[in-house]
Image (cartoon, rainbow, N blue to C red):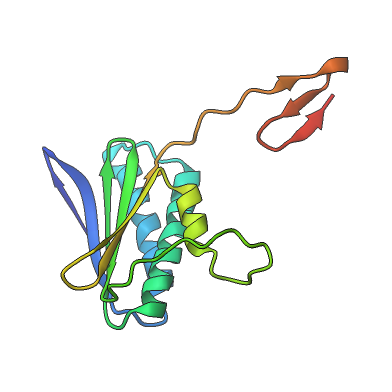
Length: 164
């Protein structure tokens, strides 16, 4: 993966994956390495959560590309403002569709997970194949306030735990 930087362009990196078994793990590692380099070499604010969520989203999108498309997979990562934008291209022109929530369904929840984690997601058909784009926050969201309750207890609105 080769990083690119120009004064007026975002920091970015791209790689062609062969679409074979280990490419999913390779894509996860490349995404984490890219964000770590952006933090250490370019001073970009990148939370540990952003690294982990980016790895999860990359894993889901590359897994689907490997499962449904033959041939190579292209992964592009770039920093745009306070977001990391990741794009995955594959040769299958069929656009993914998020299915209705179904607690009884085993598997096929990947796109639901991706869409829940992203600040933006789009799927576009290309002249050959498709390109999926996800945008993720680089910094952690601000903590949610605790709600004061009768009797002095407080409920943590993030974890939904009660504290005295």
